[in-house]
Length: 349
Image (cartoon, rainbow, N blue to C red; front, side):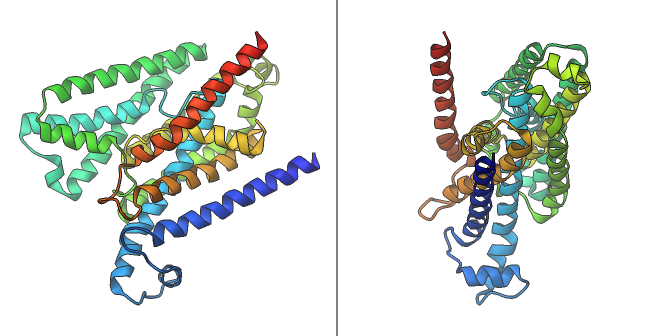
């Protein structure tokens, strides 16, 4: 046990070190390289030797870095909760259709305003961006409310999972109809939003995003004990006095809130919530949520910062969409999980 505890301490040390390294790399690297000393000076309240570096750090890279950190942590917590609740290693925070709900809200704003009002949301500047964020959050919360209502009547997690996937498909179908009848400029704007980005969140928007994500993360930490019991099975959990219905609703609300706010501000970020729990379990070799929950918060932040750094590396024309990078990293992880489960099934057969 002592040896395992030492491995966990080392694992957390590695994650914290990686988080600090990627945090400063995200601020210092890009099309313009900023020396480490200048970064420390600006973050400490001083002035950089070049005024343009002050603007780049404080108005562009720092809010983008904080956004990536929060999004990675929130999606990783949501992914761990969904995989534990449904006992499915391929479940992610968007599996219940909440991201599709956000997409539906954005589609209604971007595609319908162009069709019926002749207004391009992208031409409205900050007002247009706020409208898109609000529409995404409202759409996601409406789907979350629908899923919660289903969860109160459906006792079987598998059926609830299927219902969530079907709701997502229905939302995607409605979006497809709107895209078919919309001008190509509006469709292009919607596609760009769907590719995801950490770069569109200003300090004003972070003032909303930070407290909501923190509430979701704290909720995830408070649900560690019932999640640990659910791993043993619902019947066992009930025998220990766990209210399965209430616990399931709390988990869905926590994951739904995190998914809704992150999707609203950053777009539908793929693979982070699906891949990070598996990376963390591989690093810590445990299913104990007391270890995994803080670990996925750190690992999710690290992976999001790494993906954001790759997307902004010098040599790229502007910045790559974040989903391009997360897909390249997350897809091999998901494939390895599928292959590993198939091998285990073959051994048990």
